Image (cartoon, rainbow, N blue to C red; front, side, top):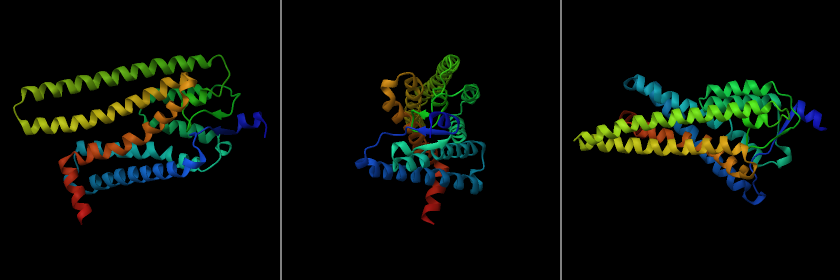
Length: 265
């Protein structure tokens, strides 16, 4: 099969560089993690949607979060599990499948500007066929092009990523600054303890997600850090979806009580 056939129809996904000796261990770890993510998030959706006492706007928000986490994990983990047990030269997928995966990867990230970037990428011609990532995303797609106009995508991607990160981090700082100020002025120790416990776990998940996302975005421009970028991109899709049900589900008293009641019954 020649390069022209590859560039038009078939994409080779580089995937994770795993030694044959460790492939089964990593496969089992990823599988257990995926089952845990799916079980926790699906269970949380079922509890919230079936309990009448939880039919409130806040709990519906908590219901949307696990649905997004299910999407984020499902869009990459099953494919990763499949590729880990294959030779690197056998990690094929069609270009259409690659674009669809990239689209849902960025839907999970809740960044509409990335969807626009995918549109900018599809206009480019392709002279390469190898995706230098564990899965397809927009940055990997526009690396398939040899056109000079790919710089437009690079500049747009960097600028919008910086703007989104500044806005996101700024919003979190302002929000938690107000929470901290309220805790300092309040004399209710029980309420302050609950706020610190909830906010602390949320900030931990947020930091992991931000760092993983930043490494994934900015290290795409640094080939020497490709393995770090791959690890960060996988963490971005499995760590928050695994921790969110614990942070937003079990930390909420009503949901925790209903969940334990379901498990006991």
